[in-house]
Image (tube, rainbow, N blue to C red):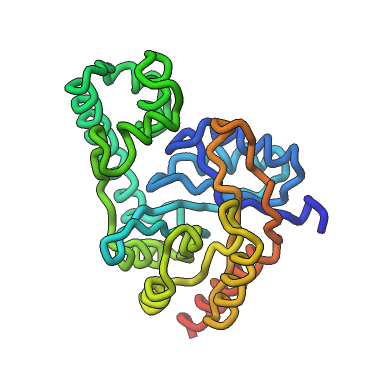
Length: 282
């Protein structure tokens, strides 16, 4: 299968916790021969207009995408949304609320770090984030630059990761709310990287809530896991998606386009939506 019919439907920009601007992502995706991408920033829609405009200039398709942080049975669950209506008012309002919440969360994290002897100003973090949404990666980068930790990973492992002294939980939807929000905006809801800790019981519950598909192809899915989740998707009548989950080259490698995700996944999504819309209007 040639690269020209590969796609990447899981990429993060600097509007959430990625390093690259949307236009830079599109340029790189075009360079490696992808035919379509989705920027799936965490709880944020801001990257799409810039990415779509850049894609139109290069002849690269950019579809609407988002990754919602949710909770099911006390565990964090990530729900990918695709092909939603970008003008949907409730979805836009949710994203705006989450952006404001991230600012308050960042301020609280900085306050905790200050008490731990690491005074970092909010202005420094804001400058680092630029036009993007403030987040822990920006704080971690500054912690490295200021000499408080030796590496980005150390910042999370010692201070910013879950249950660490600088950690502040972020607001999350329930999984059912996340799926409903995507559906109500006309999109499709997929469980992100199920092989990273989601139990089969949880997947079955999410299917009952209306989940449309599984992310079968992901860098953290070994080949046997890909086969397993593809089989599960077929048995359950679910769609499939896949992508690199690229956040930029922070760990040394640009992941965009490194997963062999077939274009057919996107076409199946469109066929499913067309059938759904037809049956609703009949």
